[in-house]
Length: 328
Image (cartoon, rainbow, N blue to C red):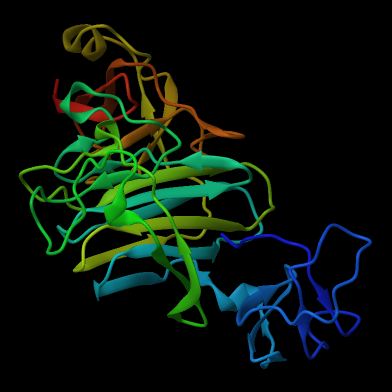
């Protein structure tokens, strides 16, 4: 989530330095006469706040951003870009992210290992990215919330050049609180395809990131407040394997699925269900990591039988989300 650049320090490492200089031209040009602007600086291990050319006490990066399983929120904030980097642990598995806009429209996307994730299934509406018959970009922030909620909101969509979202202040979550970074970002436009606000509150949106390698351990979250009354909660859970559900193979009909033997295993990502017990709007994946490097892998669209005491069935949509379920 940080902005990378060429900087110099007056010590062997950031932890022992007293001042950051720059930004510098490309190496080997030196720039130790130019004190870097106030703000936070990190070398990937340590983060320090610089004020008037003096670095403050060092913090380890594992604790300076967000920690997995912890809720991070904004209440009655203003317009802005909100950034947080969350340490999810140094193992492999699926990372569950819960995103709740609390009715006021906000934008969201997550980044890990060079890949962008914005697909959400919400408690009340299910798969969000194609609501309204228009498929959203898989790389741009997805805006959800209650249509018409909030005060002082930018128009949604907002055609280029979107004057209402010029010079948005940037905030970063560090040390357990939101910090104004003293920088701004311009949102040139927000396309209609990325606006998925609804007449009813969507409820919590859930997405899963397949963390298929131990590192990087941090997942970066970008959130965009477009109203003066921005409010949201986000929780990034520690990496863990998904729970399997023993099922039949896919069948094109509910009746056909109920006549099949249970011979395979799928893995649900709960939205309204619980681990191992499918629920409406849950994700269904083919492996316990929720996918392979850079992409989720969903169960094929169709009907599946499972048993939780009695034979039941669920239907997976073309987007990998359960949209119907019942008893055989």
